[in-house]
Image 1 (cartoon, rainbow, N blue to C red):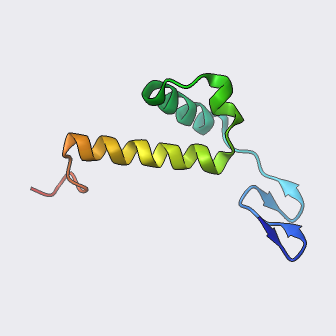
Image 2: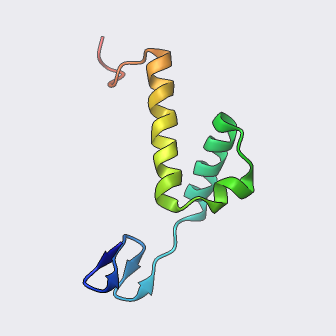
Length: 75
């Protein structure tokens, strides 16, 4: 996102590039590949924000289908 002529996102700080943890990337790609059956190349081509959004949406569908309460301690 551009702000005042500069790129602004959570992956840059004062011109330095902040890397995304590889373990988290593997979790997202594995999760989406399992549920959506997309290839590794398709998943890796997605921007980070979009991959996270797909993870949120698939998780929401799973919760709804499993009829799980938001809080597992709710009865």
